Image 1 (cartoon, rainbow, N blue to C red):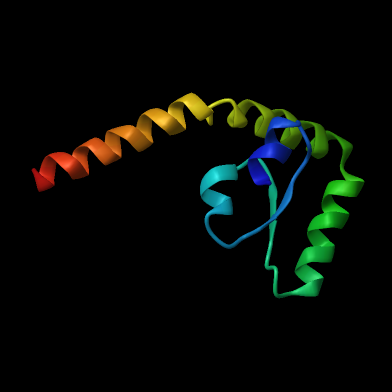
Image 2 (cartoon, rainbow, N blue to C red; image 1 turned 90 degrees about the vertical axis):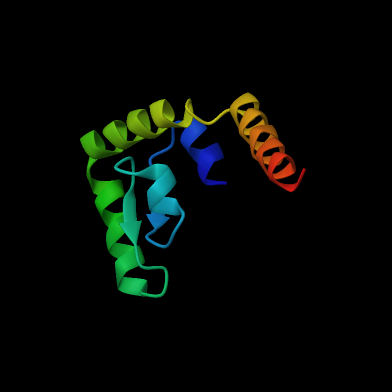
Amino acid sequence: ILLEAMASGLPIASSNYGPMPEVLSDSGIYFDPLNIDSILNSLIIIMRDTDLRKSLSSKSWEKSKQYTWEKCADQTFKFIHSIVSKVS
């Protein structure tokens, strides 16, 4: 869902639990998903700051381009090949 939101160019408020920060990096606002005030504050920040929303949207859209099915498949098959090579 995170990558879909990024690829859609949406401003993102996200959990600060992994792997969200590793994927989104500086392209979103983070909150503690177990803290209602933290969630609320992150949403208020995004709703009130038009320039920040635009900046986060642009950053997340650009960052989403590095994630492709082709790259995922290539890395998966390379990993499988490396495991098979070690067993053989």
